Every structure is written in structure tokens, then in C-alpha cells.
Image 1 (cartoon, rainbow, N blue to C red):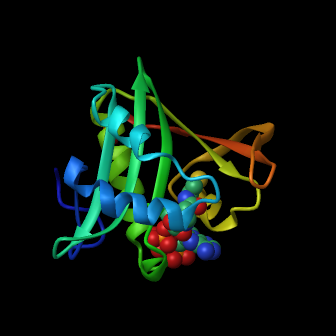
Image 2: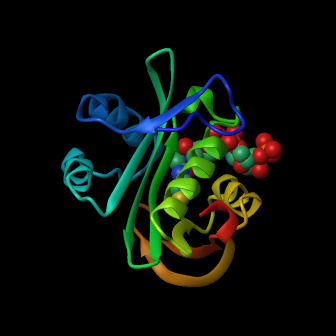
Length: 158
Ligand SMILES: CC(C)(COP(=O)(O)OP(=O)(O)OC[C@H]1O[C@@H](n2cnc3c(N)ncnc32)[C@H](O)[C@@H]1OP(=O)(O)O)[C@@H](O)C(=O)NCCC(=O)NCCS
């Protein structure tokens, strides 16, 4: 895996099974309806998925999950350990994820985000995503609309 863009101190690499304990700790602290560990395991077995982690000195600080079909991709999950938010780790993970999507031939990368998650929406907007739709009452715990965002993955990063 390539070294991260933007944060020389941070390494971004493919997620391994040995990372799952740390990933699950962050997942449970980040979402009101966290994914099960089995979801991560299942995706790790799929060649059409890409799971990345960001780490410093063997400490896992964040991760992202994507899957691909033809020339479309979905960013299904991204999170940073709460104590280390606001340091550019999420941006680095997102940019690396986009680079991986590009290398898989992705032209359109989609994601859903809670309407009230302004921090994440800002992160995505800064990376070039734009709003393309709303899924009404998409989320539970609490019930909330999802904003659908899309990035046109440019040829220059493919
Ligand atoms: C969303 C998340 C991954 C961002 O990670 P992060 O490492 O804190 O983000 P960064 O420090 O890289 O921030 C990058 C940019 O995103 C925006 N941003 C991130 N968090 C923000 C916040 N709380 N409020 C406003 N803007 C925010 C800013 O524009 C920031 O750029 P700037 O610092 O130049 O202003 C992190 O907050 C997180 O894990 N949240 C909980 C899980 C989650 O909501 N995931 C997204 C699900 S769709």
C-alpha cells in the first residue's frame, strides 16, 4: 500500500484480520448502529472490496471500506478514533480510498451520509463529492435521511 498523501507520519495500508479488534473498537465508538465484525470479515474475503487502515507506529487510528461493481464504487464506511479526529487522518484515508477506487477503474464513487453529519459532509465536499440525492429515513437509531453524494473520479487519479 502506498504511503499516505498529505500526512507523512501516517501509513495507509490494506486491512488485515489481525486489525479487526481495533477496528471494532473504533466502529462501536463511532456509530450508533455499528457494523458487526462478521460484516468486515465478509467484505475482506471479497475481491471486489477494498478495506484500508491508517496507522502510526502500529497503532490503528482509522479505516475505510469500499466495494466496487463495474465502473462504480461505494464508500461504505470510514471512521477515525475519536481522540485523533481533526488531524487530517480522515482526509488522508479518503484521498487514499479515492486513489484505490481509481486504480480499480472506478469512474463514479458514491456514499451515503447522515443529514446531520456536517463534519463528514464537509470532508466529502472538500474532496470533490457533491450531493446527488436523498434517501428518506434511510438510517435507524435515530431515524434520519441519508444524503447521497457522488465523486466523478477523474482520469488523472485513475
Ligand atoms: C468523519 C471523520 C471520518 C473525519 O475524520 P477526521 O480525521 O476527523 O477528519 P480530518 O481531520 O481529516 O478533516 C478533514 C476535513 O473534514 C472536515 N471536517 C472533519 N470533521 C469535521 C467537523 N467535526 N466539523 C467540521 N468539519 C469537519 C473539515 O473540512 C476538515 O478540513 P479542515 O480541517 O481543513 O477544515 C471522523 O469525524 C469520524 O470518524 N466520525 C465518526 C464516523 C463518521 O461519521 N463517519 C462518516 C460516516 S458517513
